[in-house]
Length: 112
Image (tube, rainbow, N blue to C red; front, side):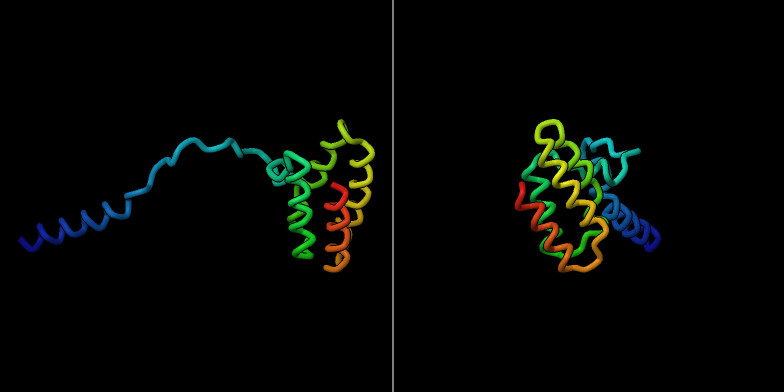
């Protein structure tokens, strides 16, 4: 009887760990995509939001992933704006000081 109750307890414990494990539905195909490809903003509003987040934090680093590509996607519709933003992006990419990063990102966001 003791072996049976130990087995039953072990079965219950193992079963409780497996609840919720399994596919949750379709997932997007992310395999083979770079961080830049995954972080490309789909709209000017999204690009502005990302720039504002950088301006608020004062940290660029990985937050810049996909930003250049997002700006370049504006070239087909707003070439002059895209060129101006790319010029500022190059400065932002090389900026090390948090206040400079904040200033550049804010300036870029304001242009959108």
